[in-house]
Image 1 (cartoon, helix red, strand yellow):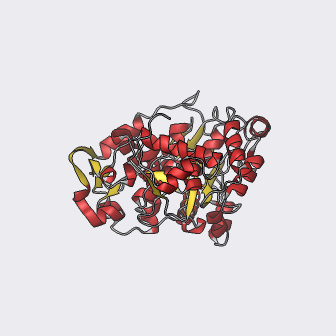
Image 2 (image 1 turned 90 degrees about the vertical axis):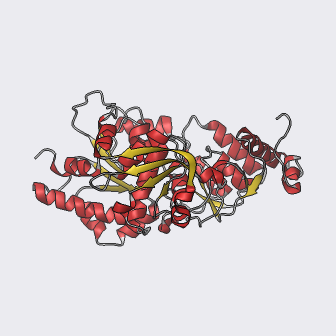
Length: 429
């Protein structure tokens, strides 16, 4: 490892020296090396009750992950925290033909059951703890303001930092569980006060409420990994973190994180630190970016179309990446019904999948909305759409989505919510 620059406590040094076993020493050594790569001078305790892991899928090629997990289990090492995990990759309810299913089950996610067993033994919260939106009230893993986390899922990290006021860096997969195992993470970046200051001021000057995923995409591509302070969005969202505002910020943040590498944003008069500190959060020399209607139109117009035939009829639609909230499921139900009534249709024109966390879907099923949505032909699922699109036989399909994350990482084509609604309720009429 070379000369160690990080200052460790006596307990941390003892773990590194192997006093609690060779396996824990390796974990601590990895965290120290990770921290030193970012010039961290110390490790700080993780203070959240639960962790969240990004690696949820049992891909055949991920044997090093399973080997590492097995080493931890064989050494009797468990996570200091129970944890939730990103969504499962498969669901029989989601449309797939015989060949696609063959690839899924025989060539791709062949280790899913094995890996889930490892996760359970290591500290998985429960069998339903699979979602990229673990912070939803229904899921039971919502960090408190100021808590230090060891998460890696980019859309969850940016939400926890920005909307909840927790503190977490954009860690990589496996680093998340290692932090949880020893109970510490390196102190740098978004864990520090200075690292949370904004180096961009983004002025929203649109004539209507901007599409969350589109606005987030524009900001992410402009500021990249920096911290933006957004002015003018409270005009459209208000100054209270209501369910509607939080759902908007969930989707907005996911786009900033995937179209750029944003781990924290501040919304003036709305997000916790912006409410408390205001423009004091803005660093000296911060750059400025103005977003108006024309800028959002330009951003969407310049998205590449990855379909072999750009004019193909969509074969599948995914809504919910990140997973939808309970209120979003209800709102979409109302919107789909209204769209179908207007076009004279009974059911959606394109196979459509709305994805949400298992416990959110469970809560949704207890409402009258569930039967109404099912009657429209829309399928609800806990799946990760990105994992579905990783299938080479699926990524050649013309798939549409309102998720900028899914657009960025796959061949799916981005439509605004309004365009999605039109496509699934009016196409073919």
